[in-house]
Length: 294
Image (tube, rainbow, N blue to C red; front, side, top):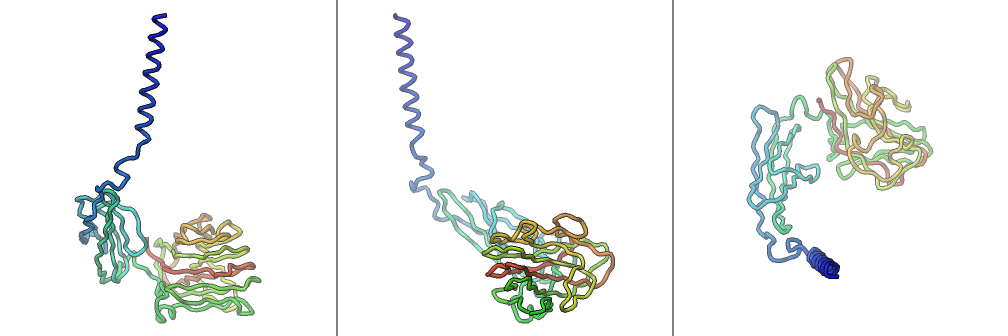
């Protein structure tokens, strides 16, 4: 009996300790609640230094004191990074670099600097002219290619972008420009594409062909990438770089890739054509079009 009583007392003690620990573990973490530990004076300052030996490449260095996490924005959207980042700005222009610092208790602060890039990188600079559609001059760099007999499909330009509209019924239209390329050099093509609503029996295709586009003739020379509801993308709303959200296979490789190279030095035609049977009511918008050397 004595042994059984001791076992029972031991069990009760263990039960009591477990209950106490369980109760304690359910208490709120002091670091989460507002207990006055939030840093209200986070220092988000940083420096920008050209990287020696690299064209249009810069080192971003945030001051580290009191900073737990860094977010950077070089003009293409904010991303989580390190306190020291190396960035490439291959195109000539003025860039606003923004650093957002997170301190203790979730305190935040942001700081910005302007970086002026005087000359485009001759190897990685964007060969597309007017790819932002920002001005009338940019828009004039593109030639409209009428592909539908009715002319019902059309491109409109606004908000630094171009949007293809189609009433459906297979109406389509294209835009293109000529670009000089070098034999056997690898290039990448990309652009931002978006539509808040999806489509059915619809495509947007990107070509880099040697043959000159002709009005009323469907272009089919060297398809590089695109969207296609038959292949499973653009059925619902989408937004992102075409290299990420696209699903159309590259004619040269038989895979989904935005890399292209050419058998001759000279002129090629970068062409975008889009249309469909049940086209999205909002149109498909393209912006930030680029063709760069790898």
